Length: 311
Image (cartoon, rainbow, N blue to C red; front, side, top):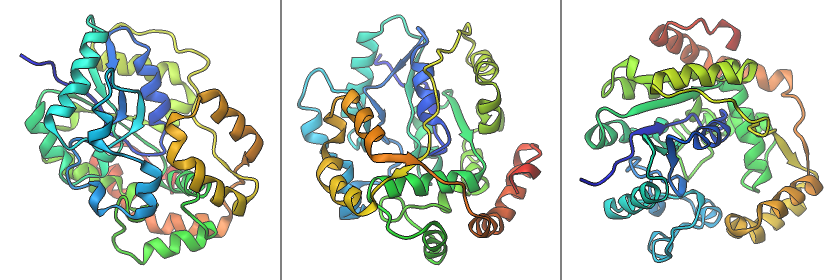
């Protein structure tokens, strides 16, 4: 019988998932897929409906990618073929034969309407992990990322107000600053397919305050021995480009090939061209607080978690 993915980190985007996935991948019993986010089960999110700008940044060609053996490490893709998804699993299982878990860390799954049922059909007993961040902070972090990749030109308040009028925004076509923070709506979809105790929720604030304790609790959920986190397992720091116009042009050239650039070069470029993002201004924060107020209350009711500090 073919190996299967049995551990899913489903989001939320811009909530520490990359750092958490990197930490999990260092555990000897957890084997990550070559593509961190293969997006296989978010069948409602596919490249033909994505914007040309998003596809240019994504640079995803499934047929070309799977022609190369071994499969290259890559951050994100949208693998449609079941056989191709199995190729990811097979390479992982062969490379790390003593694993207990194969990890798929696709942040599109939490947002996707189709993913819960698709994933339940594939692996009903899978371990499912999600990390949730104050949606106000998540939206602003997402905004700074969009600015950095040349996907956004407006100021933060104008950008959020623009997307609030879309009702709804769509993944791959819009940035979904607000949509991706509607956790209660997303969680309800997952609870139709999985019991709450099968969804291990990590709260971003707890992860920031004590990453080691958070990992210890997660290892208990996975029934694995815990391990000491490396000091290098750090969350991405929010940055914005020093020169917005220059950055927009540079991303048109470098964006499509960023997956193939040496990581050392990427780090050097970031140091030279980016600065720390400023604090979120009070007017914009107030707008987001009002936009997320009802969702936060619904999420607190669903999970039994006191989330008043998010408001």
